[in-house]
Amino acid sequence: QVQLVESGGGLVQAGASLRLSCAASGGTFGSYAMGWFRQAPGKEREFAAGISWRGGTTYYADSVKGRFTISRDNAKNMVYLQMNSLKPEDTAVYYCARGGSRYATAFARQYDYWGQGTQVTVSS
Image: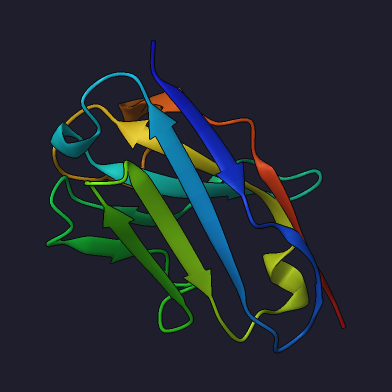
């Protein structure tokens, strides 16, 4: 059984940085793409960033491009999301998810395992 556990969320001021981590257990972590999604109150879950199985290809939503960086360490079964220049509109619950194939997509339905989420709150 695959389990994903996020950590690193918190309350920060606009302009600050946070690094989210996602620890994976079970399954074959290094064989699948990973993604970060987020869901703000009253809004649908949206794609933030994705990374291919070996980390060679990354994808970002336009809203986070240039500010967020996704990375992974397959030896440690970890995926990270470095978030810089945070804005109040980045406030959301952030979810780590495992893709169903080697290459990430922006579509939540193509991810088969999800973590419980970690709250990120950015104050103005």
